[in-house]
Image (cartoon, rainbow, N blue to C red; front, side):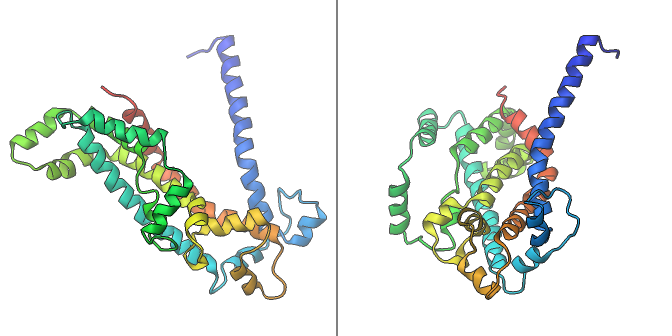
Length: 291
């Protein structure tokens, strides 16, 4: 189809704007990668302006990933928290959304208001801390899983998707003698893979990037997630005590450790996201339309 002059200008403008935005997004991460593989002597000689390293060195990565490094422990903690948290959060979200999607549920509107209320008002940091302490969850392996195990926003997204599934499917299964659990497991969930992938990705990102809860509820570095280690390196421009002990008397320059740690922490999300992006887009579009 032949474009008019105005349409050509519009399309060209879109390409220019998208190209500029892509550069703005990609350039900082490329700089991080470049600094992480550049020896500090070259980095300092160029006053930090390193976009295309002339010499590549993996000393910072070797330091962070050396045998016995706390990075492995913190990475394991993050993987455990993320896997367990996403599984628990999806279970709670699916079951709550499925129940509230049933229009014949007594008091359904009031229950939905209770969930919406939690999105607008919360107890606050201090009451939450006191509650966690009284439950004996401080500095445990479970606190970072349980503290974010449910999101009312994600539940509403999934509820909207469930409501869009024809009721005739569930009614037919119920007439054939299927229980609610069987209807959910064999009929509703297979049809809901896009929204499950969408909500699962939202939970995955939240759990993987969480460091604030770890600051509040975890004091043992052996139970800390990798994001807390990264935050300590970047915010205080110094290394956690365990990493300093590994370095001995002459630890590597902090700037290189910071950049290498950013790459190590961000890499899993960069690998996973392209594979679930299509489900994410489809789930957001379908779940946002009620019909």
